Image: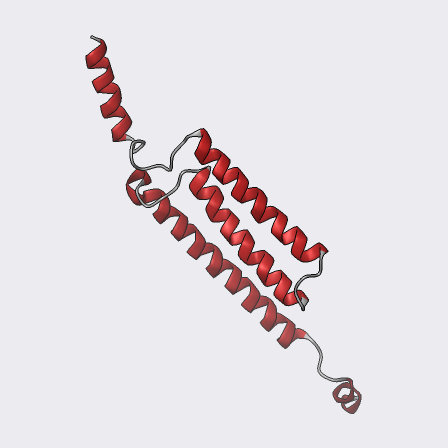
Length: 131
C-alpha cells in the first residue's frame, strides 16, 4: 500500500510541474537568492551615498537597472518562475503583464507631455500683444 501511495504522490507531484519546473527549493537555493538580493540592495545605496557616478541621471539609470536585476532574482529564487513552471503559463502571464504596464506607462507619459505642451500659455510677450 505504501508503494502505491508513493506512486500516486509522484504522479500528483509531476502533474503540477514541481519536479523539473521550479528552481531548487532548497536551503542553498534560498540562501543564494538572499545573498544576491542583499548585494543588489547594497550596491544602489553605495552608488547614491558615495556619489560614485558622475551625474544624477547615470546613477538613476544604474539603480533602475540593478532594481530590474533584483526583480529577476526574486522571481527565480523565491517565486520559482521559469519557462517550465506551470507549462510556461506563469512566464507568459508575466510577459503579458509587463507589456500592459509598459503600454500604460508610455501612454500616461505621452498624455502628460502633450497636456503640458498644449495647455501651458505661450511666452509672456505674446500675451501682452493680445491686450
